[in-house]
Length: 290
Figure 1 (cartoon, rainbow, N blue to C red):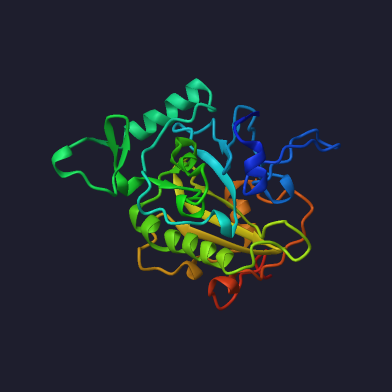
Figure 2 (cartoon, rainbow, N blue to C red):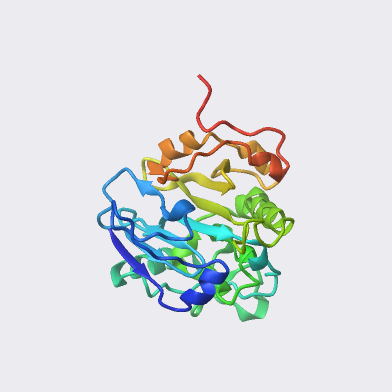
């Protein structure tokens, strides 16, 4: 598995929401600040052909085995200082130059297969542009949202194809978006830093597709961790726009079994108690009750 990273602005990103690189003695792997304890999700399959792309705002593992070369997962972290107003920010998709050429071509080809030619006489703000074509808004979404980073100078990274998913419109505009919003509101409600120093309060999030045997997504998951507490959500592909995100609470083990991912491969001890902070009446256990 190849690892590529951006070299721009490490000092700024460390101060706010960025990338910390180090080396562990046992595995000689970099510690990635977007992931809990610096350890990103680990897939149980053969991912030797995959690439992990490290950006200022997110890390992503590009699935080399899928035709579209979409991410297996995207990891990011939310701090209150990074949240801002994103309504006027451009949503123009761009190729990720950190992804090797064949994968970049596959990402772009998948995007191109879901396009309409531009009709400038009646353009729609909710459609997305890629060079001189328009991606169908109903099939485009971001695994890491712009709203959580619009107060940072790197928000445009969220328009990279390495952050794209085929999120259905009803899911993307409904419970998926509302869950992103409640994450942002929760982080903004906290003091800027922890009481023990200048470390910002941080919500770690991992999101990605729930694959079917045919390779197309059966749905999408989003798992958040804050201060040792975890909340996990899995949304079916056909989730309707009016559905509440609390209805999508799912045991962490069920998501990991469906995806083949060890989402938190570090040594953190987690409890399933975070969903109550998001307005849900009860939290799902880490594993189904026997």
